[in-house]
Each structure stands twice: as C-alpha cells, then as structure tokens.
Image 1 (cartoon, rainbow, N blue to C red):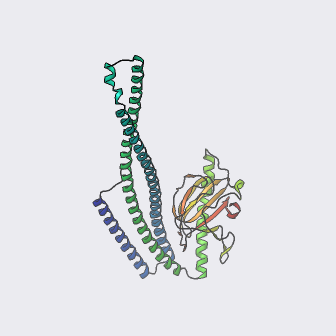
Image 2: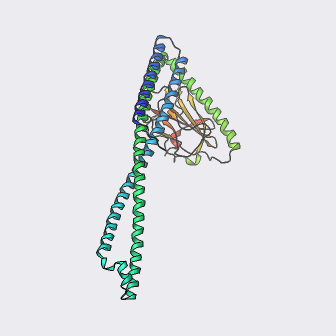
Length: 369
C-alpha cells in the first residue's frame, strides 16, 4: 500500500492540522474561562475532568498506535536496506564473473565453433570441445538469468525504500500533530484539576470524596465479580486464579512503589492497593492470563481496567492514560492492556494496582516476585 502524499498535499494537510489545533485551543480556553467565572460544583468539575481525560485517552491511544506503526515501518526499512546492500554486492560479483567469462571466451578464439564444424581433424577432440562449450554456455546463461533477477529485485527494493521513506515522513507528521493535541488536552485537564482541588479544600471534604471514590470502585468490582461468576459457568476455558502464582508475578509496570497496601491515606481511609510510579505512556501489563471485565472511567481512579483471573481472583489497574483492551477481551500474562497516566485527578503519572479475592482487597505485593 502506498502511503505517500504529494508535497502540495502534505502542505495542505499540515495547514489543516494547524487550523484544527488552533480551533481546539480556542475552544478549551473558552471552556476554562467559563469555569473560572462560574461557581462550578465539585460534581460539575468531576464531569469536566472525566470528559477531558477521556479525550486525552483517545489521543494517547492514537499516538501509541502511530508509534507502533513507526517502529514497524522503520524495521521494514532496515530490512530493505540490508537486502539492497546484499543485492548490490551480488550484482557487482556477477558483473565481474560475466566479464571474466566473456574475456575467456574471446581469448579462446582458436576453438571457434564454426571452424570446428569444417575442420574435424580429431572426432574425439571435437566431441570433448562441443561438450565443454555447451557446459560453459549453460553456466553462463544461468549466471545471466540470476543477474537479471537480481537487477529486477533491486529496482523493486529501491521503489519500496522510497515508499517507506514517504510513509515514515507522513507518520512523523501525524505523530507531531497528535503530540501537540495531547499537550493541549493535558493543559486543559491541569486547569480543571486545579479548580477541582480548590473546591475540595477541607479535610472533611477530601475524606468524603475519597470514600465516594472508593464506593464507586467497590461497586464496579462487585459488578465485575458477578459478571466473572456468570462467565465462569459459561466459559469453554478455565482460569486457575492466582493462588499458585503467589510471589512469582511480574509487576504490571516498571517503577518504584510509592504507596503501600494498608497504609493510612486520609483520616481513617486506608490504601486498598498500591501505587507504582511510572513514565507517562509506558505499557501496563496484565499480571496473569484472564478476561477483561471492566474498562471505563471511574471517579477518583480515572481510566480503570479490571481483569478476571478465575477462582475469585481479580486485578485492578487505575489512573491509566488510555485503555488498550475492552470488556470481554481475553489477555495473556504480560500483555499490554493500558498506558501509564495520571487520570482520576493525579498530579504525577502512576498506576493504582489492586488484587481482590472474592471481592476482598488483599496485599498485591505478596504476589509479585
């Protein structure tokens, strides 16, 4: 597939992208102005934050897909460049060989084929020379055919390399545009979050908000648990749970554990999971084989994935930038299911991670190696 766009087409596309970005920036500035001038409630601001984080998720997912496409095209380009170098070397060797054969044939002029037909002094000698000539001609013809095939393939490779270069340029333009949109969306979210934090200022308000967030998560987990039990009865494959994997699982994301299970969070509210610091956009991996039961936005936890591992075990992944799997998707151990983010009103990118057994939160660090 040819992904290239004429130069004038690329200029027009870039101009259109700049116009869309400027329009988006103007819309978001107007939205923030309205929020600044109004006395929006915490619930209203939560709604704006949710919308903002869902919009960020779309762009982040598209950016992740573009990055993977870039890596794939670059890999294909590298393979073509290696093949190009191999073909050029083979063609040079074949040119040298054919030139040598032609020279030898010219130098051996006293064995001219026509002369031998008229001057057959020695029948045995004549038969040997004819056999030799046939062998040399056949070998030379084979070399010529191989040479032609290599030249034709080299032309094809050269054309494919031009296409890959154009595709890369187009993908890089797309990536830059997506990054600019993502940055604009993130700035809008930051302004909304700042206003929300001002609205929820007192200790009692923070505790009430945390309890409401926790209840939203517990309700989502309970629905997922009921769905898991129903799915287990209908499933054609069996998930064995996590009991046998205790102490053997890789962390879902690489990073330092910042908040520990059971530690005090605010007032009497304690952590039901752990918080792992990570780099924004890094992959979040499923700790074990399972089925995604929930993939949506939850207040306080942002974009959340809940994976059923069987036998009453579930893992919960929150604060994601984007979700890469939908409810109903089956996942393998170590498979990417989301991207590290700061959704749910987080100041810094991290992953909120829980393990639950029959609805009860248990210490996830006991399962990690």
